[in-house]
Amino acid sequence: MKKTLFTAILLAASLMAASTVQAAPQEVTMWHYFDQKPEQEMLADMVEEYNSLQDDIHINATFVSRTELMNQYTVGALSGELPDIGQVDSPDMESYISLGVFEDITDELESWGELDQFYDGPLSSCKDPDGKVYGLPQNSNCLALACNMDLLKAAGYDHMPQSLDEFKEMVAATTDASNDVYGFAMCAVSTEEGTFQILPWLRSVQNGTGVNVDNITADSAVNGLQTLGDFVANGYMSKECVNWTQADAWNQFCAGKAAFAECGTWHLAQTDAINGAFEYDFTLLPTGDEGTSTSTIGGENFGVCKGSENKEACAKFLEWLCSQENEAKWAAVGGKIPTRQDATAEYTFEQDGFKVFTDEMNYAQARGPHAEWPSISEAVYTATQSVIVDGTSAKDALETAAAKINPIVEETPLPESN
Image 1 (cartoon, helix red, strand yellow):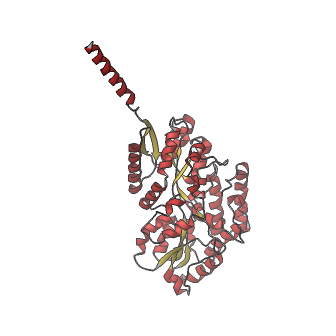
Image 2: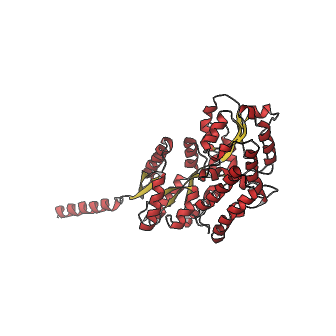
Image 3: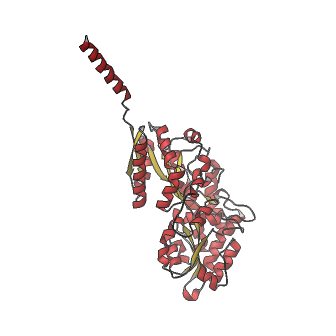
């Protein structure tokens, strides 16, 4: 009797213990293309931390080169072989949304209640034309203007340009052909990199109105592009800008060969190249009316991929990854801009001028987002090259571009937030 009772007690205890054993977390795959040491290490640390905080999923982060990753998305959209979570460049996301690579996680993110903390520009790159959300912007960057203050002072100015008209005046005044010094340097190469730098001049706010690429023949866009063409025609900007990458244009500025340069957030970590040769500062891009600015957004998004069996859990991870605290932490380590407005208050960066870029984010717009963005981008940089290289008028060049862009955006309009 005692033995039977003892056995029953052991059995009950065993069953109780078994009922309290947690099920193993579901394995989740995440693909990314971060190839720089700070970003790779920080992502690995964050994934490890998240895995230790909960028992629902175990994330395995895998590096895939950017080119290969984009190819895998295209193949995976047809085969169904996709990761649970994937990284994508912000202007490309809409294209992959349209291919069926990413899941609609609007309901999950709206119930989170923090979407209103994200800058409109980065968040818009995660949406489809109907406003549904497929991921979150994890990091961002934008463009501003670097100024050689010594050259400005030598030309009689004690301040940086605040409007397009003033900028034109200063570019002309700081050009010194005898010493091979141009007033302005920018990248206008015939790739997406060129479009990235060209767009602010087409989207400029003039007479209180700004436009996007779906109204590319507007007077303000024509004036903005013609300004760039005139800079080259008058010798204020090198004709080589059509071959320069953003790094090339920045190097011209650091070498003292350009009074102004259109530059990105990441260039702040490269000011050592100036090596004390001159005083420099940064300001908002003076693309239009005084007190206005326009800029272009870069950065990466993460989304939940189609067919994931852990959609809700993956969305929870994205919410954690893009939380206020983690956005601020990531920006400080990676030299990027937080995609959340509430993260910038806690964000500190040792490089001078970073506040200018965080302010510029209030005026920055995403490229697209649109499923046919590559075709739109090609029309933009082709028009610019036509003006700079062939001397075509900006009006004619943009009308040609519009003939390619308009049918695309008429069929699928750009998001209203742009």
